[in-house]
Length: 180
Image (cartoon, rainbow, N blue to C red; front, top):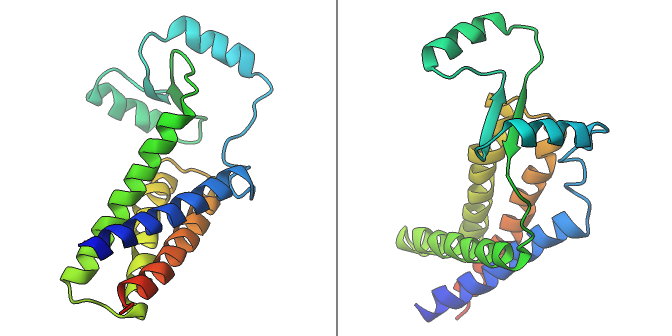
């Protein structure tokens, strides 16, 4: 159990360090969020007309039936997804803490799954870790690409993160978990 905890802790540090570097230093996600020259006017309208935080699809309708009818008229017309928050809260410490804890749980679950399935060798940990990375990319960002037509440039960094971070984690776990 001690080996699992240490392996998961270091694995989480590796995944977290890669995520931090890819967002803050390497520029992998620089094109993820676009600047809009009319952002002040857009925010003024949203703030004056929106009372509830949430994800909005524009245009939309208040009921499922009305939404289905609207969808039939939307072909070829512009649309948008907007995530609206009433106020910005820069709580980087809490976000980073939660992000690290999630990484720790993910790596620990990976270790449990792979070891309970029969303690794999180095190659097993590496391929299992890469599979988790690809799985999380396909389930999260790529699914957004499919259903919300997110442009490829918005998710390109996510596939890089998935392969590099989980690949590095797999190299670590493959070495650590098979160390005598």
